[in-house]
Each structure stands twice: as structure tokens, then as C-alpha cells.
Length: 253
Image (cartoon, rainbow, N blue to C red):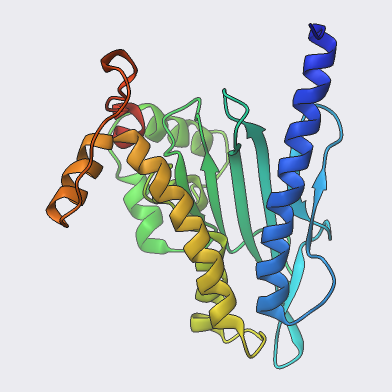
């Protein structure tokens, strides 16, 4: 029987191996999207965290007509699930910067188990909006609104980036491919001729994974949907083992 130390080492090796496979998939999408041969993300396994992130610390430079306009930073904090069977993303962040500024324009965040009232998947808009600032000043009383007022009283002005706008919870949040396509559609950034097919391939893999997880959250709904399509679905396990509704994931903000 292996010792606790050996089990921890094996657990660590499993995380790093699966994180490397995940990084390879992200690199495949980004390299095909940009039409380049060098890797864009790598695995940083120093300390207790295993992170897949952009190799350049300041972010991946994105161009328009060959000129630098944006920097994109990508970061996934990875863990194995409880059964050590698949890699779970504990948190992720995609931040878009103008290449001449340090503060992001927009940031997409995911926190698998948030410790506060922020949505598990959310967006922060680092923009100036007089209307939104006034709406924040006129907000009612609750913990987050009161905290913003305290910050204002201490000399910190209200900023739209303090708001966390929900993005579909842990199952239906945007993928990196969605962020990249937005940059193409809205800003016409440079990309390869095959950019669309690369994003569709990556997005399809992502949504397939998320769909499987969503089915596990509510198997009865999946059975009903398949039955309506003409499938026959039969449970072959024992009654005690039959999976039930995982309402926490379905209801999570």
C-alpha cells in the first residue's frame, strides 16, 4: 500500500499531466486561430497551484493590420475532481487590455466555489459610464452597495469594474473561443484564414464537456429529452447508485 506522501506525489503528477493535455488543446486552438507555430500558453506548476496561463507575462499581443492593439491574458487554475478522473477548472480569467494600458478593458472571470456573493461566472467592465456610475450611487442598501459607499467615503470613486455581471453560471459560461470571436467581429483583429473553423472546433469540444457535466447535474431531464427524441433510456445500476438531481450547480448564481 502506498504511503500518504506517495499518494500526494501521484496526485500531483496526475494534475500536471492532465493540465499539460489541457494546455495542448488550448494551444492548438490559439495557434490555429492566429496562424502561428509557437505555443501561447504553458503549465506553471510551481508551489501548490497548477496553472495554465499565457507564456508572456504581459499577455498575448493581438494586432490589427499588423499593428499591436490588444493584449490578452489567459489563466486557468486547475485541480482534479474528487474521483481523480478528470481535470476541473477551479478558476479562470480572460482579460483584454489595450496594449498601451495596464488596466484591462474587460475581464471574464470564473470561480468554481466563490466565497462571497459574486456570481461564479461574471464579467467586469473597466470602462467609464456616467449613467452606470449614477445608478451605482442610487443603489439600495445591501452588503455590496454599502461597501462601495464606504470606499467612496474613504476617497475611492465608484467604478463600473466594481460590478460583477453574471454570465450563465458554472455550466453555461463563455469559452475562450467566444472571447476571441468577439475580438474578430467587433475589432477585426488579425487572424488566420482558418480562424473560424479553429474556434468552432474548440467551442464544440468545450460545449460537449459542459453538456456532459450539465447532464450529470440533472439526469432525469436528460432522460426526458432523449425519450422525446425517440431514444429508449434504461437505468442498469442499482437503485442505491442511481444519480439524482444536483440542484446546487443548476441553481448556482
